Image (tube, rainbow, N blue to C red; front, side, top):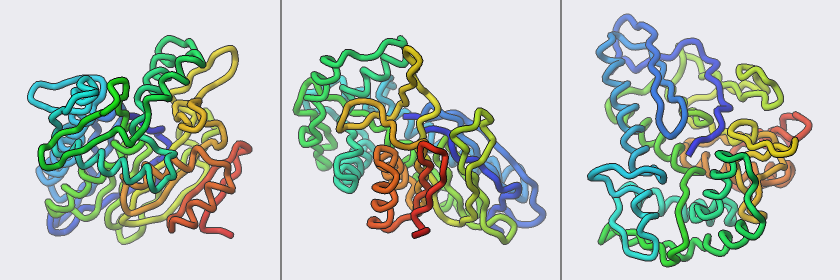
Length: 329
């Protein structure tokens, strides 16, 4: 479920709302780990107690959703995605959030023309194994697995709270959308608790709320050609939105001198190799997560045109390292 950690917080000061963190404010930072990535929350609050409440709200929701969307482990009392995959070919009970995320995943499939397919677990598991062993999947194995990725074989029954994978050899992998969707849920929970000025960073997913000391937040997009993880290719000033980056420079597999990224193209069943990174700016982190993956599979011009046609801003870094902005004609 990990998305490349390509977005860096450039703001030095983050403020909580007067309602939840009134009076003199102190800068607090908290770290956690979920969805196979580091999660950071920074805020200025009036007391350590106020920030601790915010921290527990955000990190608690991220951890809870990680267990629900985990495809590698089961948890007692949780009808999660791992359990659904284990019952492929049968009707499986599922948590309400599983039904919601899978419904969203099917919508993203349509919005991206099939470029983001949560039913590609059979193929993605082969590449996951390859990264573990350092051995490329056999072409025949990929093709065979590719026969079991038809999203039409995913049946959802919200009334019965069940999921059915009609193909017994099919499995789900929600890595392209789950972290962004979960981060959005966590940020929404914080807002419902009264917090309006904070930043949540989960790998390549950053959600900004409110302003930084009366100014927009500054968020940096990592330079994918630099070995220095803090080097930036671009900086953006923004408020009340999400920024999600997909990139091919972490969690890679190198075999015989050739490097393969972790983002797999459904059209070829092989890792994408058309861009260095794609960043999407949208109010909804889940949708931005899906779109950033889709753009990463496209040629630069196609990605820019797609972003413009769908009404969102994107920063594309092509193979030469040039930064292309869909907001610029």
